[in-house]
Image (tube, one colour):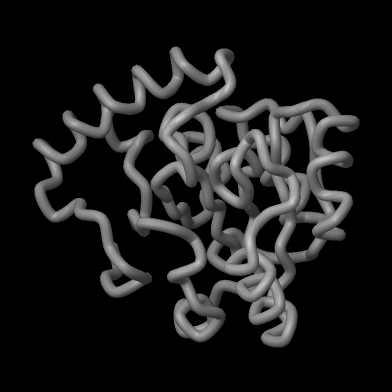
Length: 178
């Protein structure tokens, strides 16, 4: 049962994953959660590191698409300055949003990675969709109140995962394959 929570990689933050690392694994698109993955939930402008990483992905021809459970209005407002395409109301941990975005791009499962800061939504959705997953540490230590129950469960499940899979460690990039 723990396997459905197991990410392909655990990386401290997404900016440590280079387009070259993605391309070396055949990944042609990055799907990402929004809050506390790409941007702090309370800062929609993002950081210079985010903008640099986005520019590197763009230069490499790797699209970045936000897959969020938030409303269309919330995601549109949060991504407006970033000019990113998105799918809102993705229904994670279900795979609908990821599958819809993947099919729209005409990509196979092994050509996509889903990035997120939560096991309960992002990683489960990626595993159900059959795509790679990257679990990242949250950008900031606070969350919107609606995320608190998931974060509590994430911490419990992460401890169990690390007991069963001691090789699961936070990395600085995609240095290990599953």
